[in-house]
Amino acid sequence: MTTARGTALSHPVLLTSILRNLVRNAIDYTPRGGRLFVASHRCGPELRIEVRDTGAGIRASALATIFDAFQRADDSRADGQGLGLFIVKRAADLLGHHVEVQSVEGRGSRFTVVAPAARYDTSEQPNLERKTLGLSARCPRPSRAPRGQIMEVFLR
Image 1 (tube, one colour):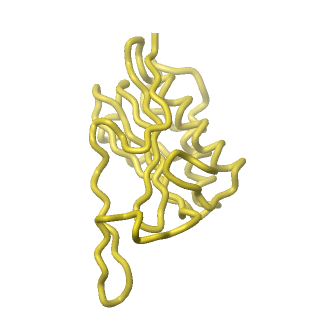
Image 2 (cartoon, rainbow, N blue to C red):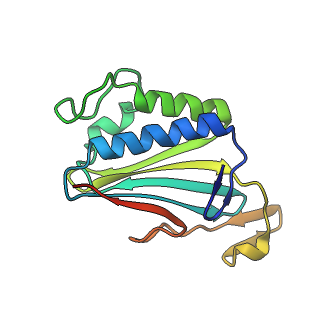
């Protein structure tokens, strides 16, 4: 899959399914007037694809179980069986990718899919440090405006 910031080494159908589920959840849990961002950026040998929203967020006590089958962070907000994030996690595990989540209840969520990038060139990453046992990348946290933004959606 190719994004504004690179190409991920991944299975295109499974990665598309992961992103589709994350975007669907972001839309379902973001009220009218909210925003949804999809962005990507390279971080050393990885491509980080992020889906972020300004929706309901997930309470801290629910974060540990949101990737379990039939679990829903908030039953009152969206239709569904609670399988979307379970599918995301299973597909990511099959691909050897990693899924990270950050969320603040009432402010929104950020899901980041970390996949290997197709090419790795240290000249593209000015903030890389060389260490004696290989490369170590320092990747700053995305700011309010994600780098490599693919799309921004305003929900009406």
